[in-house]
Amino acid sequence: MGKLLELSDLATDSKFSMQKVESAAKSFLKFQSERGQWIAEDSLEKYFKGCWSAGKFIREHFGFNDWIKYSYSYLYNRKSIERLADELKKRNVDLQRYTEYVASQALFQKKMDEFFEKKKGRYAYLLPDDLADIQTTDVPKPDVKLVQDDITELRKEFDEFKMIEFIDVYKGHYAVLKTDYSFYKYRDSELIDRCKKWCHNFNYANEALKLLTNRNVKFNPIKDEDMLEL
Image (cartoon, rainbow, N blue to C red; front, side):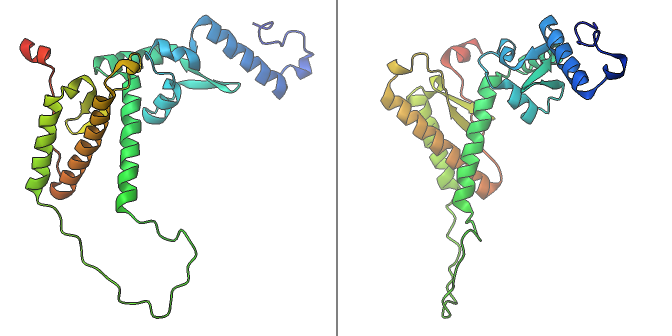
């Protein structure tokens, strides 16, 4: 161990200098990593298939804290990673797909926030002296049934064009286009464009319904073959 930590040849009074202790710690971590106790960032894909940004995501979204920093990289405790991977498997969660879902939802929410909220205090300004008494009333809200009918039509369109092959619907009210690019070149581009538009319209309609009624619809499409099994 002394050779591993590069301390054996040092004089007694300098063995525990800060520089040497840090160097020893790095060497020890490298040794542990090589033994398999710690997993490097680029090895996490083995546990979370297809998810190349797993490290940052599990730290930020799952509060994963069983890690250490080695040089400029993170090392993750293998046993804790295995437990997390098993827990996600039990919950039927594909981590890569979940990262896409979170990113899509965040982008959609950002667009909605920008649409409904005006940013104030962004620029310097000079108001004319006669500027006053310029007001309007609230825009009439659409009838709830109008929004519900829109969602009904969207569900019919979903079934008619068999969009279940290209769209995932999460929690019954949020749609995300599938992103497997393996055969993307051979897909029907017109259908894919329709699916993209459908996702936007479906998410928009559900957001409108939530604003009007404080609740969402529940749409859980089932593939034909799965329906036969039921």
